Length: 366
Image (cartoon, rainbow, N blue to C red; front, side, top):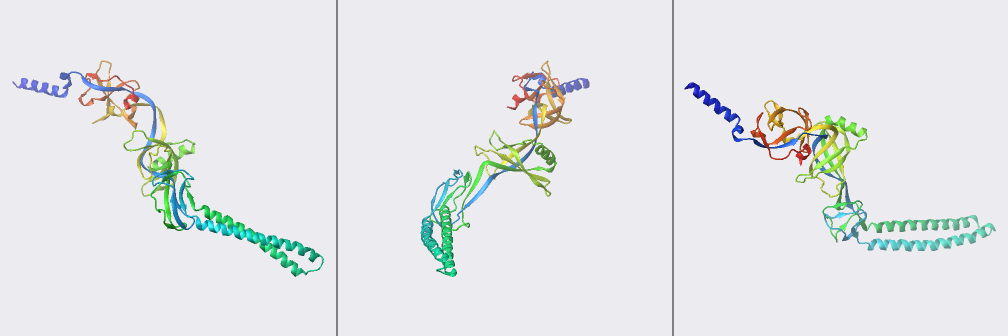
């Protein structure tokens, strides 16, 4: 009786260990081991930063007469932003022009007097003092004409300041001053404009990556930076444009900046994004879809499909991951087929039923 119980117990354990033997082949999804160039990347969290920021102020005192934009509007360099009441400045210009006309007339008369008295002086009819007086009067009025011309130029400049145009192309913020308000020169902020195309993305990386980054830049290589926005499939691609000149001793990190064209304005100042910086590229890397790699008590492994539609457990050494693929440093060769889904019911030697045709590792990513 004891022998019979032992045999039954062993049979129960065998059925529990390999339930699929009773249920038939295990349905799985597979993919082929591929080979491609994989970038060596460093990952970080970045924040958008305006490429340039301008706080628009007035250069003259006056009353806001008109606003030429709507809050949050995209403007181009040279677009009209504000109009200040020009009446006082037009009056100043007319006064300066009148002063010029007056002094020009007086200077013309003084010059004529000087020419007439020059002959009298040469004939000895008038004294040196009298001649010098005519000469200095003519020179003084000539200087007054030049001062009036400068005053007219200044008045025209002041009048031009009544029209405020955008110094950069960018996006306007909140309107800080509305029509009818009296503003002071260089003291009242009117609006803030952020240039967002192109745009910076700031991010920090550990100092251990500083040497390969500097080496890449010194070699003249354009280092690619990718910004991934939460909830959006396609990333924005830019290039590394700035490496800070110091390492933050409190965190052991260094500040970097990537420049992005940002034509669709998907990146925004202050926005958090996931950043990938490509340090180098690994050519002819052996890759599999990341879901093919499993972790067991003895390390990481994959199930390799054999010609007789059974699977073998294959230990592997993995490298970096990139866009859904994992680099296999050791354990697989290109062209082999691995299981990507259904591993939970598998064991070495299990029969499988492929639910889809084998695909390349690149296809397995999509």
